[in-house]
Amino acid sequence: MSTGTHAAAEPGFPADFVARCLDDALAHGARTYGITGLQGTGKSTLAAQVAALASDHGLAVAVLSVDDVYLDHDARAALARDVHPLLATRGPPGTHDVGLACRTLDALRAGEPTVLPRFDKLGDRRLPEPAWPHAGAVDLVLFEGWFLGTPAEPDAALDEPVNDLERNEDPDGRWRRWCNDALARDYPALWRRIDRLLFLQGPGFDIVPRWRWQQEQALQARHPRRKAMTREQVERFVQFFERTSRRAMRTLPGIADRTVRLDADRNPP
Image (cartoon, rainbow, N blue to C red; front, side, top):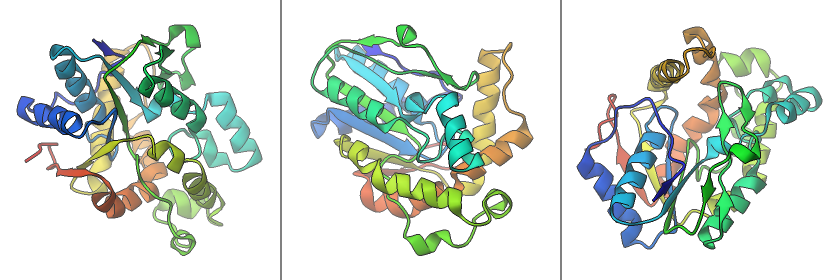
Protein backbone atom coordinates (compact mmCIF):
# COMPACT_ATOMS: atom_id res chain seq x y z
CA MET A 1 0.00 0.00 0.00
CA SER A 2 1.16 3.49 -0.75
CA THR A 3 -0.37 6.49 1.00
CA GLY A 4 -0.34 10.05 -0.25
CA THR A 5 2.17 10.03 -3.08
CA HIS A 6 2.52 13.30 -5.02
CA ALA A 7 2.40 13.80 -8.75
CA ALA A 8 5.29 15.84 -10.16
CA ALA A 9 6.56 17.52 -13.29
CA GLU A 10 9.37 15.18 -14.21
CA PRO A 11 8.79 12.01 -16.28
CA GLY A 12 10.52 9.80 -13.75
CA PHE A 13 13.82 8.22 -12.84
CA PRO A 14 15.12 4.95 -14.35
CA ALA A 15 13.71 1.85 -12.73
CA ASP A 16 17.11 0.56 -11.68
CA PHE A 17 17.86 3.81 -9.85
CA VAL A 18 14.50 3.70 -8.07
CA ALA A 19 15.25 0.12 -7.03
CA ARG A 20 18.64 1.16 -5.67
CA CYS A 21 17.01 3.88 -3.58
CA LEU A 22 14.52 1.45 -2.08
CA ASP A 23 17.31 -1.05 -1.42
CA ASP A 24 19.29 1.72 0.28
CA ALA A 25 16.41 2.48 2.63
CA LEU A 26 15.67 -1.15 3.46
CA ALA A 27 19.28 -2.27 3.79
CA HIS A 28 19.86 0.34 6.50
CA GLY A 29 16.62 -0.30 8.33
CA ALA A 30 15.33 3.21 7.76
CA ARG A 31 11.86 3.87 9.11
CA THR A 32 11.99 7.41 7.75
CA TYR A 33 13.95 7.82 4.53
CA GLY A 34 14.67 11.42 3.59
CA ILE A 35 15.01 12.60 -0.01
CA THR A 36 16.42 16.09 -0.47
CA GLY A 37 17.67 18.26 -3.31
CA LEU A 38 17.16 21.73 -4.71
CA GLN A 39 13.88 22.88 -6.25
CA GLY A 40 12.94 20.96 -9.37
CA THR A 41 15.38 18.11 -8.73
CA GLY A 42 12.65 15.47 -8.85
CA LYS A 43 12.27 14.66 -5.16
CA SER A 44 8.51 14.16 -5.21
CA THR A 45 8.77 12.15 -8.43
CA LEU A 46 11.38 9.86 -6.88
CA ALA A 47 9.40 9.52 -3.65
CA ALA A 48 6.31 8.49 -5.63
CA GLN A 49 8.31 5.98 -7.64
CA VAL A 50 9.98 4.46 -4.56
CA ALA A 51 6.59 4.29 -2.82
CA ALA A 52 5.05 2.49 -5.80
CA LEU A 53 7.91 -0.01 -5.96
CA ALA A 54 7.75 -0.63 -2.22
CA SER A 55 4.01 -1.20 -2.54
CA ASP A 56 4.67 -3.73 -5.29
CA HIS A 57 6.87 -5.56 -2.78
CA GLY A 58 4.07 -5.68 -0.26
CA LEU A 59 5.28 -2.84 1.94
CA ALA A 60 3.01 -0.19 3.42
CA VAL A 61 4.40 3.27 2.68
CA ALA A 62 3.48 6.86 3.52
CA VAL A 63 4.86 9.91 1.71
CA LEU A 64 5.20 13.29 3.36
CA SER A 65 6.74 16.46 1.93
CA VAL A 66 8.05 19.43 3.87
CA ASP A 67 5.82 21.41 1.48
CA ASP A 68 2.81 19.77 3.11
CA VAL A 69 3.47 21.57 6.39
CA TYR A 70 3.76 25.15 5.19
CA LEU A 71 2.22 27.65 7.52
CA ASP A 72 -1.15 28.68 6.19
CA HIS A 73 -1.59 31.93 4.29
CA ASP A 74 -3.00 33.77 7.30
CA ALA A 75 -0.15 32.75 9.60
CA ARG A 76 2.40 33.95 7.07
CA ALA A 77 0.48 37.18 6.60
CA ALA A 78 0.82 37.77 10.33
CA LEU A 79 4.58 37.16 10.13
CA ALA A 80 4.77 39.54 7.19
CA ARG A 81 3.02 42.19 9.25
CA ASP A 82 4.90 41.65 12.50
CA VAL A 83 8.39 40.60 11.36
CA HIS A 84 9.13 41.22 7.68
CA PRO A 85 7.03 41.49 4.48
CA LEU A 86 9.01 38.75 2.72
CA LEU A 87 7.68 36.20 5.20
CA ALA A 88 4.36 36.24 3.35
CA THR A 89 6.01 33.95 0.78
CA ARG A 90 6.01 30.26 1.66
CA GLY A 91 9.07 28.04 1.51
CA PRO A 92 12.09 29.51 3.32
CA PRO A 93 13.00 28.34 6.83
CA GLY A 94 10.52 29.71 9.34
CA THR A 95 7.47 29.31 7.11
CA HIS A 96 6.71 25.71 8.10
CA ASP A 97 4.79 24.18 10.99
CA VAL A 98 7.73 22.12 12.23
CA GLY A 99 5.76 20.81 15.19
CA LEU A 100 3.11 19.38 12.85
CA ALA A 101 5.80 17.69 10.77
CA CYS A 102 7.42 16.17 13.87
CA ARG A 103 4.12 14.93 15.27
CA THR A 104 3.16 13.38 11.93
CA LEU A 105 6.49 11.59 11.52
CA ASP A 106 6.41 10.39 15.13
CA ALA A 107 2.96 8.88 14.68
CA LEU A 108 3.98 7.18 11.45
CA ARG A 109 7.19 5.82 12.96
CA ALA A 110 5.24 4.49 15.93
CA GLY A 111 2.82 2.69 13.62
CA GLU A 112 -0.12 4.75 14.81
CA PRO A 113 -3.02 5.63 12.48
CA THR A 114 -2.69 9.25 11.51
CA VAL A 115 -3.60 11.75 8.83
CA LEU A 116 -1.10 13.29 6.43
CA PRO A 117 -1.16 17.09 6.05
CA ARG A 118 -1.58 18.41 2.54
CA PHE A 119 -1.07 21.91 1.13
CA ASP A 120 -2.76 23.41 -1.92
CA LYS A 121 0.04 25.38 -3.60
CA LEU A 122 -2.18 27.06 -6.15
CA GLY A 123 -4.62 28.13 -3.46
CA ASP A 124 -1.69 28.93 -1.12
CA ARG A 125 -3.50 27.31 1.79
CA ARG A 126 -3.30 24.08 3.73
CA LEU A 127 -6.15 21.78 2.82
CA PRO A 128 -8.77 21.35 5.57
CA GLU A 129 -8.01 18.39 7.81
CA PRO A 130 -11.00 16.31 6.63
CA ALA A 131 -9.35 16.28 3.19
CA TRP A 132 -6.05 14.88 4.48
CA PRO A 133 -5.37 11.24 3.53
CA HIS A 134 -5.35 8.65 6.29
CA ALA A 135 -2.42 6.34 6.96
CA GLY A 136 -2.42 3.22 9.07
CA ALA A 137 0.63 1.31 10.24
CA VAL A 138 3.42 1.67 7.68
CA ASP A 139 6.72 -0.07 7.05
CA LEU A 140 8.44 2.96 5.52
CA VAL A 141 7.99 6.72 5.53
CA LEU A 142 9.38 8.69 2.59
CA PHE A 143 9.97 12.30 3.65
CA GLU A 144 11.03 14.70 0.92
CA GLY A 145 11.94 18.37 0.86
CA TRP A 146 14.31 20.86 -0.67
CA PHE A 147 16.51 21.61 2.36
CA LEU A 148 16.25 18.56 4.62
CA GLY A 149 19.30 18.30 6.84
CA THR A 150 20.67 21.73 5.94
CA PRO A 151 22.35 23.56 8.85
CA ALA A 152 22.09 27.27 9.56
CA GLU A 153 24.76 29.64 8.28
CA PRO A 154 27.32 31.43 10.46
CA ASP A 155 26.09 34.91 11.30
CA ALA A 156 28.88 36.62 9.38
CA ALA A 157 27.81 34.88 6.16
CA LEU A 158 24.53 36.81 6.25
CA ASP A 159 26.11 40.24 5.87
CA GLU A 160 26.24 40.32 2.07
CA PRO A 161 23.11 39.77 -0.06
CA VAL A 162 23.20 36.87 -2.52
CA ASN A 163 20.72 38.23 -5.09
CA ASP A 164 18.53 41.17 -6.07
CA LEU A 165 15.72 40.10 -3.75
CA GLU A 166 17.94 40.38 -0.70
CA ARG A 167 19.70 43.46 -2.02
CA ASN A 168 16.51 45.40 -2.78
CA GLU A 169 13.92 44.00 -0.36
CA ASP A 170 16.05 42.94 2.61
CA PRO A 171 18.82 45.56 2.64
CA ASP A 172 19.34 45.38 6.42
CA GLY A 173 19.36 41.55 6.44
CA ARG A 174 16.47 41.30 8.90
CA TRP A 175 14.52 38.71 6.84
CA ARG A 176 17.46 36.44 6.10
CA ARG A 177 18.65 36.57 9.71
CA TRP A 178 15.16 35.69 10.96
CA CYS A 179 15.02 32.70 8.57
CA ASN A 180 18.52 31.59 9.55
CA ASP A 181 17.64 31.81 13.25
CA ALA A 182 14.56 29.65 12.60
CA LEU A 183 16.70 27.13 10.71
CA ALA A 184 19.10 26.91 13.65
CA ARG A 185 16.39 26.79 16.33
CA ASP A 186 13.45 24.81 14.96
CA TYR A 187 14.55 22.43 12.25
CA PRO A 188 17.26 20.22 13.84
CA ALA A 189 14.53 18.37 15.78
CA LEU A 190 12.88 17.56 12.45
CA TRP A 191 16.14 16.52 10.82
CA ARG A 192 16.79 14.09 13.71
CA ARG A 193 13.65 12.19 12.79
CA ILE A 194 15.22 11.17 9.45
CA ASP A 195 16.98 7.81 9.72
CA ARG A 196 18.77 8.01 6.40
CA LEU A 197 19.12 10.93 3.99
CA LEU A 198 19.57 10.86 0.20
CA PHE A 199 20.82 14.07 -1.42
CA LEU A 200 20.03 14.55 -5.12
CA GLN A 201 22.81 16.93 -6.10
CA GLY A 202 22.05 18.96 -9.21
CA PRO A 203 24.64 20.76 -11.34
CA GLY A 204 24.23 24.03 -9.41
CA PHE A 205 21.77 26.71 -8.41
CA ASP A 206 21.77 28.35 -11.84
CA ILE A 207 19.63 25.54 -13.24
CA VAL A 208 16.95 25.87 -10.55
CA PRO A 209 14.87 28.58 -12.30
CA ARG A 210 14.49 26.39 -15.39
CA TRP A 211 13.61 23.31 -13.36
CA ARG A 212 11.18 25.24 -11.20
CA TRP A 213 9.50 26.73 -14.29
CA GLN A 214 8.99 23.22 -15.67
CA GLN A 215 7.29 22.28 -12.41
CA GLU A 216 5.03 25.32 -12.58
CA GLN A 217 3.98 24.48 -16.13
CA ALA A 218 3.13 20.93 -15.12
CA LEU A 219 1.15 22.19 -12.13
CA GLN A 220 -0.81 24.51 -14.39
CA ALA A 221 -1.47 21.70 -16.87
CA ARG A 222 -2.96 19.56 -14.11
CA HIS A 223 -5.11 22.45 -12.88
CA PRO A 224 -5.93 24.54 -15.98
CA ARG A 225 -8.58 26.61 -14.21
CA ARG A 226 -6.19 27.80 -11.55
CA LYS A 227 -3.73 30.64 -11.98
CA ALA A 228 -0.10 29.55 -11.73
CA MET A 229 3.02 31.74 -11.63
CA THR A 230 4.42 33.41 -14.71
CA ARG A 231 8.01 32.88 -15.78
CA GLU A 232 8.94 36.25 -14.29
CA GLN A 233 7.29 35.33 -11.00
CA VAL A 234 9.16 32.03 -10.91
CA GLU A 235 12.46 33.85 -11.46
CA ARG A 236 11.72 36.01 -8.43
CA PHE A 237 10.32 33.14 -6.38
CA VAL A 238 13.46 31.03 -6.56
CA GLN A 239 15.48 33.90 -5.12
CA PHE A 240 13.71 33.30 -1.80
CA PHE A 241 15.44 29.92 -1.70
CA GLU A 242 18.84 30.80 -3.11
CA ARG A 243 20.71 31.44 0.12
CA THR A 244 19.68 28.24 1.86
CA SER A 245 20.00 26.30 -1.41
CA ARG A 246 23.62 27.36 -1.79
CA ARG A 247 24.21 26.45 1.84
CA ALA A 248 22.70 23.02 1.13
CA MET A 249 24.96 22.48 -1.89
CA ARG A 250 28.02 23.28 0.21
CA THR A 251 27.14 21.20 3.25
CA LEU A 252 24.85 18.29 2.36
CA PRO A 253 27.46 16.17 0.56
CA GLY A 254 29.17 15.89 3.95
CA ILE A 255 25.93 15.42 5.90
CA ALA A 256 23.72 13.16 3.78
CA ASP A 257 24.19 9.42 4.04
CA ARG A 258 24.14 9.11 0.26
CA THR A 259 24.75 11.74 -2.42
CA VAL A 260 23.79 11.18 -6.06
CA ARG A 261 24.91 13.65 -8.71
CA LEU A 262 22.33 14.50 -11.38
CA ASP A 263 23.07 16.07 -14.74
CA ALA A 264 21.14 18.99 -16.24
CA ASP A 265 18.39 16.61 -17.38
CA ARG A 266 18.14 15.06 -13.90
CA ASN A 267 19.80 11.83 -15.00
CA PRO A 268 21.57 9.88 -12.23
CA PRO A 269 24.78 7.98 -12.99
